Image 1 (tube, rainbow, N blue to C red):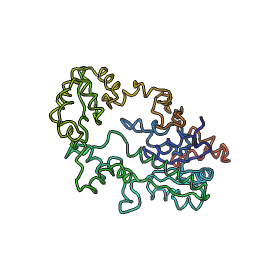
Image 2: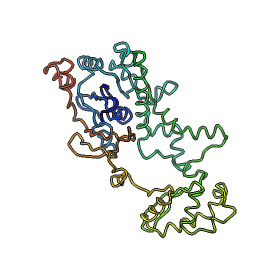
Image 3: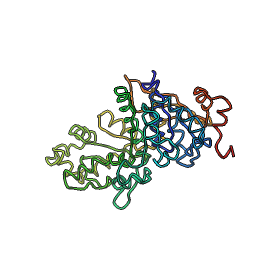
Image 4: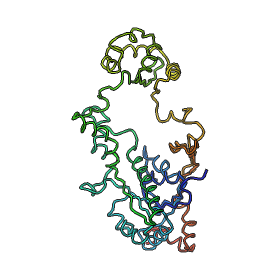
Length: 391
């Protein structure tokens, strides 16, 4: 199926995760996303260690145009490209954009129909000048406090804020496209990494505002369910079990022969079972410890009780649900190495957008894109050289 954003042109100048995630999402939805890079390439391409996956993960399916926009000719080429675009995605500091000549005020004056999507550390306010990283805002908003035990704040185990910030950028862009269809005018959409993380901890803020009681860190939280725990299995694995309804409780107790728990007057209500956790939880621990993981999964699945093995990210490549048709997208890195990523978590009329999307080689589309803008071969060669190369 053609993507819903087919015939939408996006120009992206961004790096790391948040801005590229926005561009990736738009590309997967069918937009033409042209990533403008310096002649040396986006610095994210050169990251090592755990950062080595950033560029291939978040830049699939884009076109790469390598020009030096720090030169007057390069900036004019970018302007010519933006004149053909619907959306401009960036995640640089406002001061940097102003020096480059691509700040919102300049672009709004030149291209009144253009939608700019600005991914920032903070939105307007006292902190607007501060730089931010995913871990910084997790510490600042209380997310890290809620994730680790007392005295040991921990960041979440992925670039979740950056990724969700990019998705918020997509939401804003889609709304702005609808608004432009009505008014004919573009606008600036701004997304703040800090505000994104604040949105994620809102439930704990509201809990305090309504109750006057502070939420403890998640590892020390008060339990809202009778069984909501990780258990060891007989084959050295671990499983998470969630017994959260009357039906779950009855099914689990019958499964393990806990007829006395079913008959106990103190355990007839949800609140009674929560209060009685300390008394019966060791019995669940013992019952699960003598069963292998696969058998427990079969039992809980048949009883419709929520559960999950404790998996690692690499285990997902063997998961049957992940491997369903459309669950994974096959790609090739810019060096030709194949890899697989999860498809977008969306279905349209039951169809997953599993878009085969490769990582662009640096500057692979420079000639084609600039030629479509009217540049000659000699002019393209000049634009693709950096100031250092030309010196």
